[in-house]
Length: 303
Image (cartoon, rainbow, N blue to C red; front, side):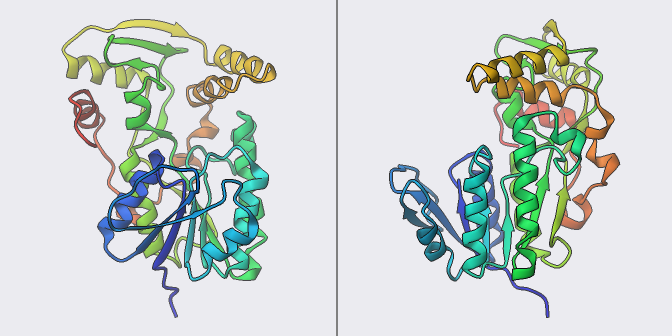
C-alpha cells in the first residue's frame, strides 16, 4: 500500500526556501501545512497555514509534541548546527513522522570531494548520515540537491552580478558550467516529492532549472538590460582562501566567499546532473530558458 503524506510541518517556513515551499504546498491543495516557529518570532504566514510555536531553544519534548500527528517534517533552518538538526530528526522519528526533508538544498554533499569544499557542506553530509540511522524506525528521508539559488543569487549580487550598477565579478575564465534552480522550482520539487513517496524515499533528489556559465549569464544580462557591463575578475581559489581566513578569525561572512568560490571552481565533480542525473522528469519540473529567467529578474517579475 502506498504511503500517504498529507500533514506537513515546516521549521524555517519564513525563509527564502520556506516561503517558496509554503506557496507550493498550498497551491497543490492536498496538504495540511503547519509552520513551527520560535516563541520570539514575529513571522507571519498565508491564511492557509497553521502556526505552532515552541521555545526558542527547540527543546526535544516540545519538538516531539509538535510533530505528533504529522506525516512530514521539513527542516529549513540554516544548516549550521549539526547537533540541533540531529535532535530535530530524533524528535521526528520518536513522534512517528513518516518522511523527513533536511536542510540540504545546495550541492551534492554525498560526494566527499564536494563536501570538503566548504565546512557547512560537511555538516550537511553528517546530517544526512544521521537520517539514514532512522530508516529502521520507519522514518524515510529525501534530500534535495538543487545547486545555487538562481533568482535569489542574481537579485542580491551573491552570484557576482550587480543589477543596478551593471557590474559583474567573473571568477576565473567565467566558463564553469553551474547547476542553478529557482526558489519557486525548489518549492515545487518538495510538493512533488511528497506526492511521489515511494520513488523519492531514502535518497538524494537532484533538480535544476538551468545550467549555465557566468559568461552565459553576462551575455543574457547585457541583452536584457541593453547595456555593456563593467567586468571585474576574481580567482575562485582566492575566494575560497579568503573565506577560510575569515572563518579562522570568527568572521562568518567568510562562508559566503567559500561557497561562491566552490560554485565557480569548475570542478566536474560538482556537476551533479552528470554524476547523478536529474529527477526533473519524475517530479514534473521543466528545464527553463536562461534568457527568459534573466529577463524576468531584470524586469522585477516573479520567476
